[in-house]
Length: 572
Ligand SMILES: Nc1ncnc2c1ncn2[C@@H]1O[C@H](COP(=O)(O)OP(=O)(O)OP(=O)(O)O)[C@@H](O)[C@H]1O
Ligand SMILES: [Mg+2]
Image (cartoon, rainbow, N blue to C red; front, side):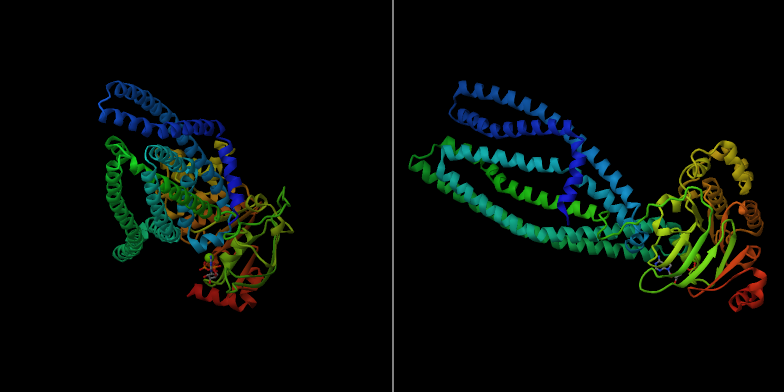
């Protein structure tokens, strides 16, 4: 991974938080200094208490009172600034990465599932943005322990040396564990990610799951996956717990030797009982020294891992972004041409040497058996997938040379299950054209036979439609999305089986609407029922990824075998 590039991106976010970072750093240094000082003063206080030195007891108690109060106030300032930094940077990272995510090729989402991307974007930015906070505790521990060490070395060098040795052993146990830990964290993350992405998909498909009576099966499957994760974490924890067993045993052993050494030193009059007590009180802090170095090491690794996991999504190495050209179409005419296009989603070829030309404002039907490649043609016109063999031209310009806006702004596809946002009908329409006036909205709703339904609602066009338009019937969703397409005013409108689930009357309505608009737009209709495309200017017949006919219905029915077969089947 290109760490430098990632750090540079981050630097830009943190740069904007200069003031807070300044407050954070100054307060952190202050806190570190106070925390380094506190144990020494507390030790002095303890020494005074053990010696019943009343004057010093009051003196140190007062110093401690002042220091603890300052500590409290500075701590508050410190955590306020760090929270601000973390929250703001987190939002900024999320915002930028989310934007870039929309530039990824659809192929990536086909392969990994949408939940995978959503999860990473949710989890990693916080861990990255919180880096300062996480480092601070380790750095604070590091300096506190140095202060304690210096103090112990001054009052008793042999014990200081002994404690240093013991914390060194402690450190090596930690580090040896860390090597494995990094790999385990990566694997555990991946397992959890896969699980929650699958689980998210299950929840989204809850209706179908209930209807298909798959509840028991899927619950079992989910539990099995969860058990696998638990088993893996169990293994990881076991390794950690073994390491801690050694560390604990070391502490017990060191405690014993500490007392033995203390007794020897007191006997030889090299140490007083009061000093031994003070060292005993604070010796646990000497462990902070190596632990904090191990902590900094772990935080650094963790931070890099999060950076890698987040930015690998959008740095165009593992997951590729869509590539666009620089040419623009300002006033689209609406012609489409395929020139010897051969395409497959993977190694299987789906479209085989496909060529055809659609003139501006023609209405074209596309027919063919299921799986013939009809929707694939739409996917390619939308540039959801990139063609590498052959050419697709919009208004005689190679689609690969066009800007994103020139393609997406001029092409609208309506599918069988269009996505309707959880907003009001009006807002769902306005998404396509925020500047549309109320009259314009009304006019388009009428054109798409939505007006009667809207009038029947208590809140009319302002009615909320629920998640993915749950309150709307399939037919209403389609009509709404056709209205959206017309409002968007894109020159090319493509309908993919968009009317097949409608009853005859509604279908008639929509076909009448399409008839009204077809003279101004290039309209392409994929249909299973030939009756819906018979009156198109031309019909494209697709069979096993090849174009086997492109003509008027009257001509095709006379001399195109595939078309005749499809027609006969429909009559049966
Ligand atoms: N994202 C994808 N990844 C891999 N293969 C795909 C993908 N989408 C479609 N296919 C495959 O490409 C072939 C053509 O699919 P396409 O959706 O174009 O057919 P279709 O003619 O629209 O069929 P239908 O009438 O059933 O909608 C099928 O074999 C399908 O399995
Ligand atoms: Mg299809």
